[in-house]
Image (cartoon, rainbow, N blue to C red; front, side, top):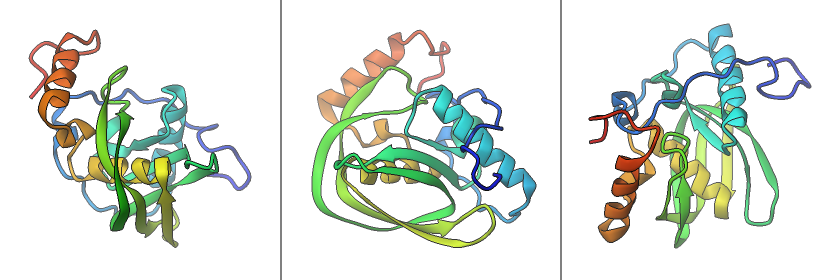
Length: 184
C-alpha cells in the first residue's frame, strides 16, 4: 500500500469463497514471503471487503489459504479500527461472553446469534514484517475472533448450536448463492 492511500483503492475485487468451499474448512498456511505479492493480496482483500460491504475478510475467503486478514470495523463506542494482520495469533479472549448477531461474506445474507468474548487480543505482523498487537472490545472483538476462526478453517456457523444451527443450515440450503451439493 502506498503511504497515505485509501486501503483497497488500487486493489481488484476477487470472487468470494462460499460456504461449502473446501478452502474455508482447512487451516491456512503461515506467510513466509513479505514481498510485493503479499501487499497486493492485502490491497485486493480491502477492495473485495469494501465491495461486499463487510467489516473483515480473511485470505481464504478470496481463495488464498494464507494467514492474513483485513478489517475496517467499529467497536461498541463507534470508534473505527482499520488495518490488516499477517500470521495473526489470538493470544487473549476474556470478559463477558455475549451472544450477538453475526454474519459472514462467505454466507451472504445470513446471520445467526453467535457467542463471542467481548475482549480479544491479536498479535501478528504487517505486510512489511513489523510486529503489531491489536486489542478489540465489543463488536470489534467479535470481528477479530471471527477472522481468526477463518484462518483455522472455521466459519461462525461452526460455533452455532441447537435450533439456531438447524435454522441457519436450512437457510443456507435455500440460499440463491449456494451451489448444489456444496454444503457440509
